[in-house]
Image (cartoon, rainbow, N blue to C red):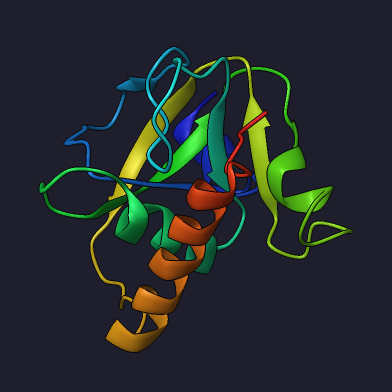
Length: 137
C-alpha cells in the first residue's frame, strides 16, 4: 500500500513496551501483555488511542510505554475478550488478527491515565487472575 493510500485508511493503534520501527511486523506467537500462559495465536490492536494507551500502560516489562500506528496485513475481527464479555457492540474498537500488523509510525505525543485509574485497572486484572477468569481467547 502506498503512503498516500495509508494516510486515508482506517487508523489502528497498538500499545506495548516493545521498541519497534516503521516497517517492523508485530506477529502472533508472543506472550500476552496481561496474563501468563501460552503464546497467543493473535495480535491485538485498537481503533482508538485510548484503548492503545491502556495496552501500553498495562503491558508487562519495565521498558518505556509505546504506541504505534499499525496496519493490518490480513483478516481483522472484533476482540471477543472485550466485545463478547465486557463491551457488547465493540465501543472500544478493539480488534485482533491471526496475521501480522505492520508498524507505520510511533505516536509520540499522548497522555496516560491518572495514577488512581491505572491502579484500579491493575487491581481489576489481579482480581480476574485470582478468580481464574483472566483467559484470553
